[in-house]
Length: 607
Image (cartoon, rainbow, N blue to C red; front, side):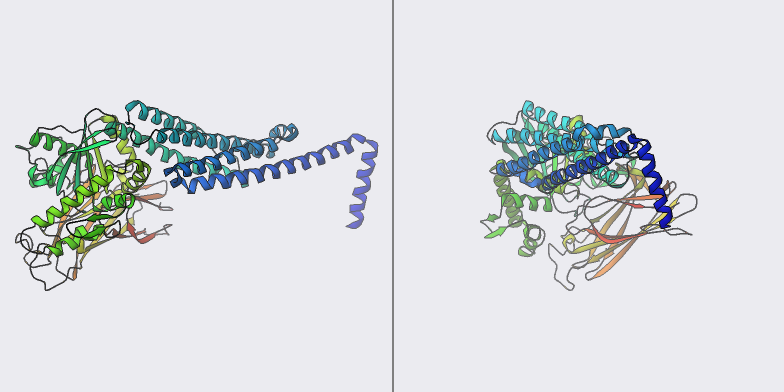
């Protein structure tokens, strides 16, 4: 072998002596390799420095809430821009790398790297421009009216950024190895940014309708937490007049005082009429939100309010107890003089849903309701005095939207579209109506037992050879209320559905995918609804059973299950199992987990 290697070396030396150009070519290639290596390493180092700055911005977006924080973000983005510019320069040293784009295999990675650096630079500059625009907007101060033109300009800037970033999401194509991996990672970041900015654009559109519409009137519906209704029981209302940052209360009162003289004519599905019209859902403000679709509830609430009071409203906002608690995270602790208690984000929910009822167990509930009204008034005043914390409020409220703790309706179609984009419309049949389930457990007892009830669901999916699926859902409701207690306002009984203190009776509803087959099911909120009743004594559990057949459940060997949460104080604990007669299903078991936000579970190899 050694002799053979020597012979090859001798032959190569002889060829070089006969053809000097070979030596020159080898030398040139060697030099090119050195240049390529240097350029690649130098570019990589600078790009990695830029990536660290970009990652800092990605993970510290909350800094945008303050002037100093925005300056910090801007400095990191500027540093990333400089580093990416230097990386592009290093990568094009001596003009060699551009020529290598035409070399098979190697050329694709060269072109891909150049494109990736250019796209990263464009994304960074877009981020810089957005931070500048936001800083300029905030610099005008909370006392400056939020005019339609100001918000429109801000929305236009955000929309332009969305278009720029969306154009940078390029196919990975034939890029493999580190270059392909980096392109895939960049595309994922761009997709996330585009989604975030689109929601910001929708938020600006909503702000325009509320704050920049002359004489805008907003009907606010405070809700108990998912008690007696899918979205929570409406206890009272507040009518606000909004003009820029000037928010004034026009009227407020108990929800029971808002009843239309006759049922309002708001179009409704056959399922809505079948399940909910008997409770006065289209006439009494207290009963509009048993359905899961707040776009219907909001429109109906506005119609009932106008019919009852003669006052038209363009926006309806429903927020429950956890959403109110999140506002205290921004405003700070709230002292209630009449009760000598200080409420914060940690004890607010327990106090208003539990402690208050223990303070007034029997007799007139007037003092308790007066205290609730005092808390609501104090919270509103605190919010009005904290308008300079708009970013903090936006963050707090946006985090409540996925869990359905904050829902909004607008009479303006383009704004309602933006609300849907934000996920605040309460629609449950988008974006995957043929794969969506939604469970709601609603108290049928006129007491305050919901605080003691814990709910879990076990979903078992059996896939069939023809691509259909049978989905069995077992709902367990556990009543932790103490047994052997005296009658009280919190524990009941109400003398109607419950006869013993602590006895819990539920209306348990399951919305199954559109197009599915459910015994006794009716189309409601865009899905197929069926319901049953469960009776649970104190310190015990009760069970409800549902069976759903989905005819076309498997697509491209994948089964998708989308689950929408109910806005409960204590989330529904969920577990999922998927199986088929033969073969394994990838990811066939999920949970148990707390269902707090919409979840899409994808099970592969399901064909």
